[in-house]
Length: 119
Ligand code: FES
Image (cartoon, rainbow, N blue to C red):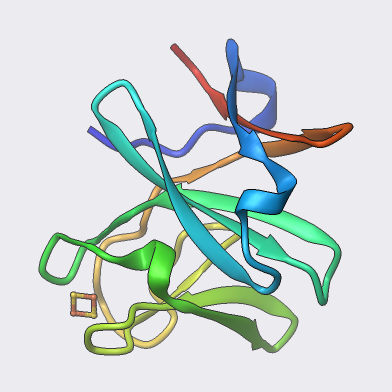
């Protein structure tokens, strides 16, 4: 149900929320259709990321509450449950063999954050 969307595959820029709704260096969950998406405001990097909110370990809807950071220049999120970490760029599980999480393009225009979907 969750599939990575590349920037060139975006058909819909979904208006997620205003920038102020996302904590600095943290995440918040948004809903698009039946999907829960974690959106991260990586202030330290000046970048935004989005991924599925479900952690593939136990399919808990928790990744938006994860800690974000960097490992070897790769931005990552650590699941708050059992600390599995995932690249916010490729979705790859960096400390295990779990399946990759889906990632989505994000853009900010003015004060508004948009997440890109392919449908
Ligand atoms: S549910 Fe995410 S690491 Fe276990």
